[in-house]
Image (cartoon, rainbow, N blue to C red; front, side, top):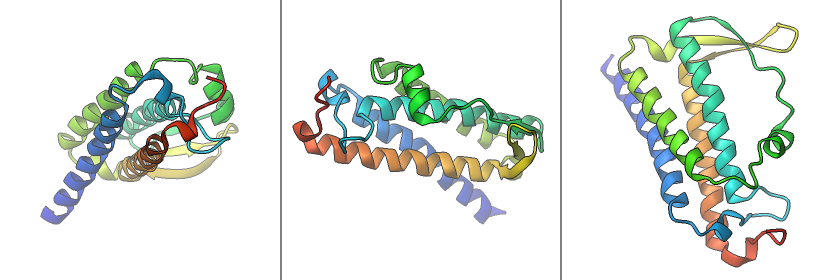
Length: 173
């Protein structure tokens, strides 16, 4: 039991640290740096921050559903894809401060709940398609790992983008 607990604590530490790494990168960035992109067709720093924030929004509810109603059917329908979603929610034009605060709040809140909830990591949801057919079962452990890895991938992209400076500046900005 002790080894499992230390693994869970390490997972939570990585989960929180990823958000702190992103926040440290995003803090005090000049507006122009928020419009840098690592590739000509890639997302800007600003868009990546909003994307990660929205992921936390969706998956924090899924984690809470797994904890409160294990095995519940979750339908994530109506999502048009990353680009249309980002356009509809004005990722390219919005301030990132609230998104960074939301990322940190989600991570802090979920870590608190997971630390105090017996058997949390093994509880799961069943993900369904638009027709209601179960396409996957996903445990809290898998969701936390997915969110952590996704955050860390984007943190690395942000580091590369910001290190590139003016080379990646969005010409449309």
